[in-house]
Image (tube, rainbow, N blue to C red; front, side, top):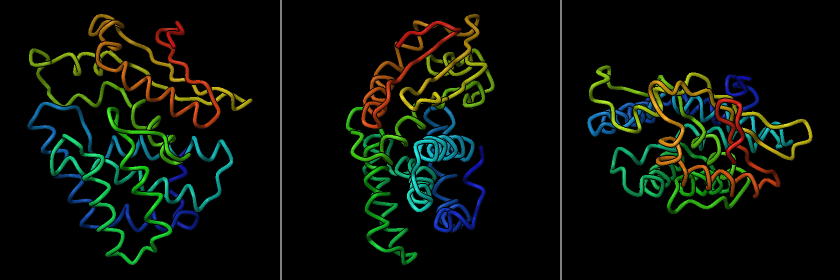
Length: 228
């Protein structure tokens, strides 16, 4: 469901998505991460995160204005990587504040956006709002083969192997809205299920906290086996 493509429903997000400066910062922050060997954090990643953030909030009955702000937060959530990977959620929140303020966005709309961005990452992130919780789950669930940026498999580290091993990734809320499930198909020729937990356990636990904030359970299903 591509909710983010509706410019009439989500006017602020439409402005942000087509803003030249924001686009430059998104592109440049991914270049920094690429040089350090990180997986893709550019437009493909933020597109997935925006779609999933909107899907979660729309399914749970959020109004269009809330989804508009959430899409904005999702699109800008990784800007801080251009400054440094460490504490990028906090630096990214400050960048988002400056950029949105410069665009004339009212403080009542900026506040929930930067609150979500500043709390989206594991280690220091906390699901302090529905928007923040949805952004956490959307961001941490984006694991897929196409996020691997190095074309030479001989250079793959554990993060590359795990992402490359994922052939299918589906995020789904059940009909009763009591659980959100991340269903992964992993090709164990490229990465082991144990390696997934080695690098993503903290992220999955944060997803559980975020789901609980939204009054749902979080389930991780890998190769048809429920592991959380």
